[in-house]
Image 1 (cartoon, one colour):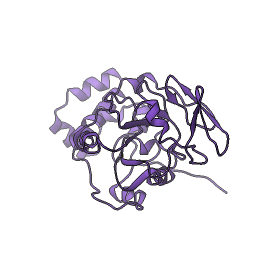
Image 2: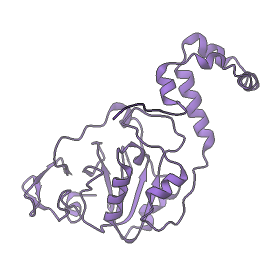
Image 3: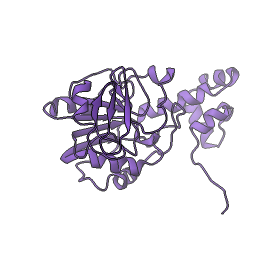
Length: 261
């Protein structure tokens, strides 16, 4: 979305009132804060500087797939927020690509606990693989609720069984019941699961193989699937026990905390 149209819907993250353009910045008439605009991208952050996308971020594009692909067409006469858009290459004049990290395609930068938009702005909000990277998903979802129009539609796609990722801070994966709880202030249309389980198997297997040293990897690749299953039924994991700490962290079945008051 271009800057002229963005200005109409942007709001001060602190005061939530409409900001006004002034020279190469945006000005909040309520609190007096000025937000810089760099190369046409508003930096709607009260303090600090948003990080630039890393090479591994830029290498992964996030095309609209399945249902999300239809959202821009269905809401062509409205305004759509792509929340945590990442390196999204498909651009639409009525879709705002929002992120906390600056990508070449980002329209506006901000923070999830204080979205830089006025109340009841968006006809639809789409987010894929973003909520799990937020330290407070409940506060973030409350902000999503605030900027959604009454009757507006949201579509959240959140990690469940995905391995730990270190590209960004990875905080919370969710079950279906967890997602229900997170979105309890919305009227549910559908709460379901993603059917692409074979993709998850490939992902896990790739992490295991990358975490092995060459001899262990060669042994693993030389086994048939039947041999692997037979050994695992006897709690004999063979070369799969010889994986790196990074692979163990990515695929750990649980985490724990021990502390004191």
